[in-house]
Image 1: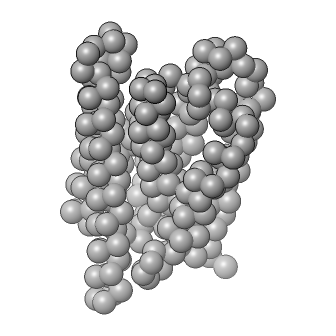
Image 2 (image 1 turned 30 degrees about the vertical axis):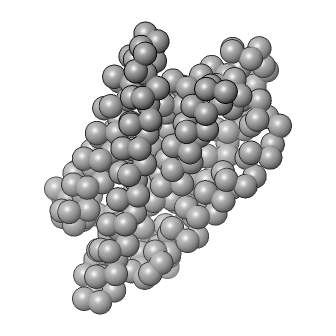
Length: 240
């Protein structure tokens, strides 16, 4: 069986893989560390388990990607159904029931939840992939520009929170809505393009079923949406 690899240059694939396998995990574990300090918790082993969990998840997605299983244009998108959806259900159903998550979430500062979204600067790879003709222009621009905007807006939001500005929570809410709409628009666009690809036989967004870019649909939608949900919950918790 031939292994399936992305058609972009190797240095781009390696750069993306290094950034995507470290940046979001570092930011997530950093948020856990902040909760550990704020609540006087001992979460060192938890941080290690989180790292192992995500790296194992990326490894499994990678191995399946090499087989070409995800490189299929069908509705609903296969990679979303088999990876992103189970991950989202894991976040939504399992995590809130665990004692450690409840403790971490209670103590984690709001700004650390917001800061995790800095990893969305990887949206620049949407444009890079388009430059090598492996992604449709409209999908690359919607996904890339939206993620970069969401990541950029993190800085003024963090500044407002750090300085305890009277409008800080309002800025957080506005930013959170913008970030959520971005990821939902990316998913909607991907479905529309895939539907068209099914009809006319074009490649659509099939490149996002190939390693290492398969990590984006497998990890980002579920994680980003859930993080936005957590921000809304944290605002409500802090307000009570």
